[in-house]
Amino acid sequence: MILNKPYRLTKITKLTPEVSSFLFKADDGAVMDFVPGMFAMLQYKNEKTGESVARAFSIANAPPSNSLEFVIALIHGRFTSKLDTAAVGDLYYVSAPYGQFKFDINEGDKFLFLAGGTGIAPFISMLRQSAQTGNKSDAVMIYSTKFATELIYHDELMEYEKTSKFKLAITVTRPQPGDSFKGYEGHVNAEMIAKVAPDFKDRISYICGPPAFVKALKVALESLGADPKKIRAEMWGE
Ligand SMILES: Cc1cc2nc3c(=O)[nH]c(=O)nc-3n(C[C@H](O)[C@H](O)[C@H](O)COP(=O)(O)OP(=O)(O)OC[C@H]3O[C@@H](n4cnc5c(N)ncnc54)[C@H](O)[C@@H]3O)c2cc1C
Image (tube, rainbow, N blue to C red; front, side, top):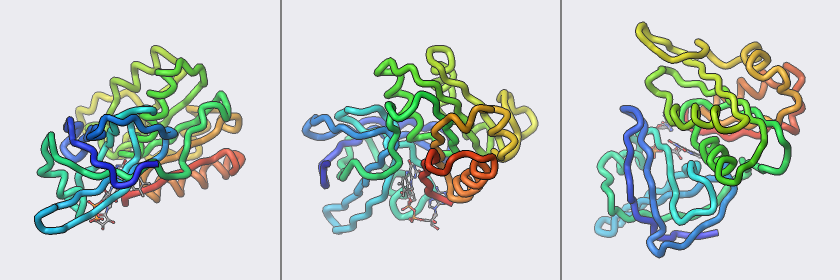
């Protein structure tokens, strides 16, 4: 566990007009261990004015690492407005790792991942860890976004489909004329889960996304007869 440790912003990647990834590196280069699914508290400090604001962000890279990658929706709130003008070289402070939403790679060999919007972040960490460790588990993901243009890490996810026992289903809730994605349209529901992962009862389910998404999918899984003990969830945003 680290507390208020200086991390330097080393890379900013614009993924969509509203979402960017931010890569931070420990200023002393120290490696931190964590479990995919866990989050870090990232703190902005203005030494001149004394202003300080911290928010939780899921870690998107695989452990262990001297860097932390975050996928952040730039909603111009108290913390995210600081990121609007953030630049490579800026210093932030990290306390981590935290959280109960932990992907235990050894807990089972079949998983169901349900991701909504930036809720894809912890799953990227999970999949990267599996790829790096050569884990052979079988994962099926349903990844939902409002617009097709909001699908992030799509190429990386498609690569996992080729290289591991990973199956990706995409759904877009507000498809637009001219969209070229291949997948479903509309919100994830019980019917979609049963179609994409008919063996969902054998799988450990992880759900991450906005509260309405997470709550609806817990209900959907339970209504289908999935064991509540095999359902893990994390939520944020609106
Ligand atoms: C465990 C955990 C993990 C998280 N991981 C991530 C992550 O990986 N990526 C990420 O982008 N965020 C993540 N969040 C949310 C993050 O901590 C902040 O709440 C978010 O960035 C907004 O902070 P802010 O200070 O800019 O907005 P605030 O000033 O705190 O809020 C401004 C307004 O925006 C609303 N709001 C908050 N989040 C959203 C949203 N996503 N979309 C629309 N409206 C919103 C608030 O309800 C409020 O009305 C996570 C939260 C938790 C608890």
